[in-house]
Image (cartoon, rainbow, N blue to C red; front, side, top):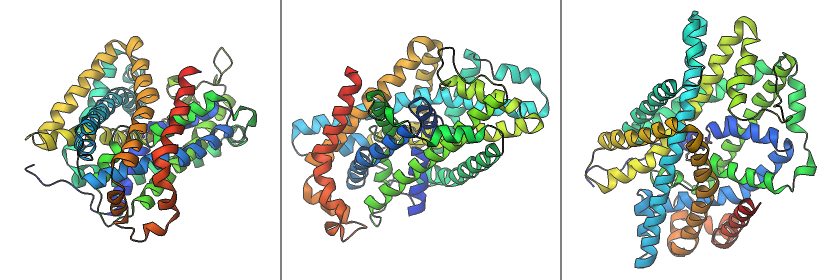
Length: 450
Ligand code: PHE
């Protein structure tokens, strides 16, 4: 390795980067709409339980392995064991993580490109370019390619800047803006007629649905996607963390902030849907379900913005800026997974590795754009519903069984010297060995069979 490894310069820098990765389209779009279509607060309740019971322990597994190994996901998993067979499995799991992270980025780039197109449209409406507005909001391969490309270049330019000068700098700048925009939009939407009806839908649980397997599976998938688990993202971010920091504490902060922002986003999206209904916008599909997919973001909400009169385009601009920021602080963490591997395993410079890998991923996005019907949903399903939970299990098993217990303890003691006397040390090691993988597997099994 020619250049020294990057490192986050401060605790807050890590928290910004890791919460930036976690808080993405999954929180602001996925969580509220899943809540709306899965029994309102009943979903929120199940999600909270699963996030703390399964996702937090799995996040800890990634952070511990990452900081212990101080390397990319393939070397980290490959080097934990001296046993040749286990080593090969580790390398295999690591490569799967790199591939899945890249595939997630390939569809994420397309969706983020839509956000950028709508952001631009809000700006062109403000300045009165109505013909451009029309093109920008009409689904088309050229538009998707151009805006997906712009988003990919943005992601690459941040990652090219390195850990401190790219990831940490931009996450620290963008996350406060994201929170400010989110809160400002909530305050505005709450003043509109219809908002309280939405709040009721969001916060009053329909407890009848709480044991519905579909609800539980959706909540688990959502928790894993939202905390960026299973693909090595958090492992790599953990590998850039100082040995002076307490991992259980930082992991808990990231989990709580991620859940908190998802919940807060619900306070914006669900009331906004009901304000739209109050303004005469159709919010139920022909089958009688609440519109939750892309139509929510790209039809229901834009109709709401245009029913708001003069302030509409400004609200729209703020909303799509929020979405674009959420997307970019997550996409950089996905790109870092393959880039860190390339930089540490080859002689390539970070800039070169970023450019080559970023271009390959953009090429995959292009293939998806031109075969949208066949590939888009498929890639999302395979990566988020199947690969993330299964790789999450593998990472728990590596932390629980393969990493020697004395190394595990030594790693956790860094930044938390009295760890042996904490509840965390009494529960987590056994938990991550047996219960966590078993519970994920069980939930996963239900999802495949159901
Ligand atoms: N957590 C991100 C979101 O909620 C998505 C993500 C998945 C990021 C996997 C990195 C790795 O949108």
